[in-house]
Each structure stands twice: as structure tokens, then as C-alpha cells.
Amino acid sequence: MTLLIVAACLLLLILLIAVAKFHPFLSFIIVSLLAGWWLGIPVDQLTSSVKTGVGSMLGDLVIIVCAGAMLGKLVAETGAAQKIANTLLSVFGEKHLQWTMMVTGFVVGIPLFYNVGFVLLVPLAFSIIYSTGKPAVYIALPMLAALSVTHGFLPPHPSPLALTAQLKAETGKVLLYGIIVAIPAILIAGPLFSQTLKKLKTPALQLFKPKLLAENELPGAFNSFFTALLPALLLMVLSAVLYLPGSDTETKKWLSFLADPVIVLLISLLYATVSLGILQKHTLKKIMDYYGDAVKDISVILLIIAGAGALKQVLTDSGVSKDIGNYLQGLSVHPLILGWMIAALVRVCVGSATVAGLTAAGIIAPLVAQLSFNPHLMVLSIGAGSLMFSHVNDSGFWMFKEYFNLSVKDTLRTWSVMETIVSVMGLLGVLALNLVV
Image (tube, rainbow, N blue to C red):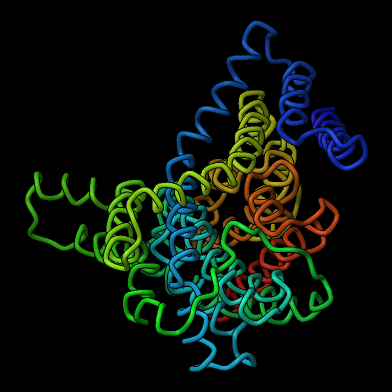
């Protein structure tokens, strides 16, 4: 009965948005309240659950998304995006751009939280898209596939790191095996799958459209690349220093503070204000106008993300994930496949990869201990399952849709299919690795 209710709620959400043309935020709130009521959350606690979901989602993302949009807007308006695009095109050529974006997404994605990496790298992708005239999804999808894989498979991302601890695996082995499994998943879900999307042409978000300037008006290549990638560089360096032995407690507290994505983005934005703004003869008032326009342009995206958070919280509070796990636990299938199935079904129903992964790990952990099964492969199997078929109840789905100006239908056939390929290829890679380790 629980699964039928969840399915009915998701169908209603799709109908409201795609058929009735309700605003997605309003649709999320309506469906969240109905879902909570049907799933047994007391009516006097329903609005609290919705508000908690909205608050927690925005609390995690609002500063990151706004600061990232401001940085991307400044990079576009000052000509830095044009300089980056020109440089990449001259070095790699249009023929290899997809591979360039894929490698960039993978390298940058290892130390970054998914949403941070998305917000930071999408403007870079747009600078290439506008310079070449190539379809937006075709160019960007390999980069986002790489980001998705690092988020689901590789420590130090929160979900695989938590799974590693919960299943008593070794972080180093999980990272090593994860990279082995990640490579074919990225190649197939990224460059190969995107070949089918060459004809999908949609107007990319105007927020990051580079302002075309004469060559002598552009900032230098080093300044452009360094400023645009400074958040990723800071996060990688600070995260590495944080784990070096010998630092005292007070030093680690400050490093932890500085390594927080919010602080990193604020530092990077202030640096960009000087390096790309003031030093390039832009007035402070003009720079602040850019920032104001950036926030206006992404306000709708923030609302939709908040709505997705409300539905996720209601489904979590109702205990749906536990019901799904208990149902699947009785099936007689290979433990690696079982772990993947539990995570995948929770992901499809609840929308959160982290909730899906942790729920599956809690259910499967006793089985792993009982059978003395390889915990490192189980971490990766559950991680792969937690990425399965992102759709309308996932904030990542809506970020992709709104940034790339896609319909719900086109988002399902691009983003959702890409995530499904990553998930299935991840499972196949784990099963193959299980034969040799």
C-alpha cells in the first residue's frame, strides 16, 4: 500500500506540472501535504514536516547557489568566460570538448559536494556552449555524469563516506575500487549517451551568456581560469591540509571553517570582485548590479529546490524508506544486487541519494557481517543504487531542468536516463569487480 501511495503522489506531481501547468513550487507543496496525510503523518505535524524540508534544503543550498550564480555572472560579464572558452577551444579543439568537460567534472567533482560542483561548473560549460553554438545538453552532460559518479561512489563525499563507516569498510579501498567502477560508468553515461542528444537544442540560461568583447578588453587567461576555478582549488587544498597529521585542535577548527563550501565561495566571490571587477576597471556599483541580476535569475530555481526538499522530508518522516527496505530484505537475491535494489527503490520513491544510501546500508549491514561479504563492494553497490533514476522528487532534476531550459519530458529523457545509466553501469562494474577481488 505504501508504494502505491508514493506512486500516486509522484504521478499527481507530474500531472500538475506537465499537464495542468501548475508552478512546480506550488505543486510540490500540495503533493507534499497530500502525501504526508495519506502516509499517516498526523495532520498537526504535516506543516512542520513541510517547513523543515524547505528550511533544511535552502539552508544547505541558498548561499551556495546564490554565490555561485554571482560568480558565474561576473565571469560572464567581464569577458573571463569568453577568454576561458577561446583558450579551451584553441588547446583542445571542438572535437574533444566533451572529453575535456568530462575530465574537468571528474577532477573537480572529487573534493566538491555535488550541488557545489554543479553551480560552479555549469557557467564554465555555458561559456563553451555560447562560443561554439553546440547544443547545451550535448556539451554539459559528460561533465555532469562525472560529477554524479563522484557524488555516489567516491569518498570524501558524504554518502559514500557514511556508507564506508556504517559497513566498516576501508576508505582507501573504497576510493580505489570506486575509481575503477566509475570510469566505464562515466564514459557510457557521458560522451557515449550524449551522442544521442546532438539534435536536442534548447535556449541555454541567459544568466551566464558571455558578453562578447574585443580581444584587448578580455582579462588574461591565467586570471580568468584561476578566478573561475578558485573555489575548487581552495576546497581541494584545504580538505587535503585538514587531514595532514600534526595540526593542533585549534588549527583544525579554523581549517574546517575555511574548508566549508559556503566560506570558500564567499572568499572566491570577494577575490573575483577584485580580480575580474575592480582591477579590470569595472565600478563597484556595476559589479553589484551583476550580482543583483544573478540572484533574480535563480530565485525560481531556489523555490523549486525548496519544494523538492518539502516532499523529501515528508516521505522520510513517514517511514517510507524503512517499509521499502523491509519488503526487499526478504528477497532471495545476491547481496550486492539486494543492496543496489534497496537503495534504488528508496531513491526513486524518496528522491534523496543520501537517504537512499543510508537506509540501504542500515538494512544490509547485518547481512554483510553475517556472510563475511566484501564491504567495499557493498558500499559501491549501494552508492550506485542511490543514483538510480533521478526524477521529479529530486532537487538535482529541477536544477538541471531550470539551468538548461528543458521541459519535464526532455529532462526525463536526458538527466534521468543519464543517472539511470550511471546506476546500472555502477552495479555491473561492482559485479565484475567481485569476480576478481
